[in-house]
Image (cartoon, rainbow, N blue to C red; front, side, top):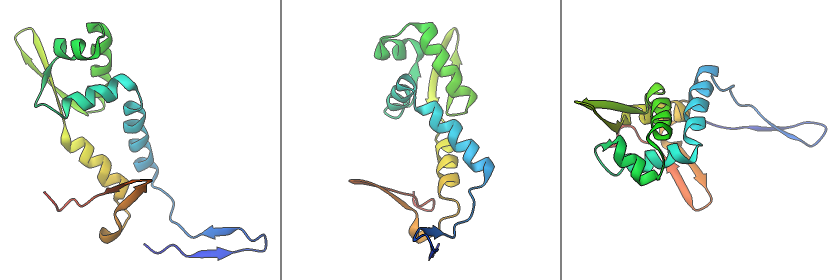
Length: 132
């Protein structure tokens, strides 16, 4: 993707960039808003470090009540970020990696393969869906 700056009389540089697809923006906003909450981000952190967790374990890790944790889990399930597995009366939760991959696909969709990078100060977020 080439970004070509053009100057105008006011010495302001305007970039000739394509508009972001509305559905892509809305999907990403939903995911990022969901993960902007500290408790949900902590749930995500814990679930990335294990195959699955029982809701009671999450309550203990988060030091929160079962209704509070269940509320956050329900929001994350509705967004298809996590899945529920029932075993008798017990609920176990695990990540849905495909949902995160879809979000990254949307974020990097219009960027040429060799330029799929976003720099944040000391960190570089890059995306190569062909890599496993």
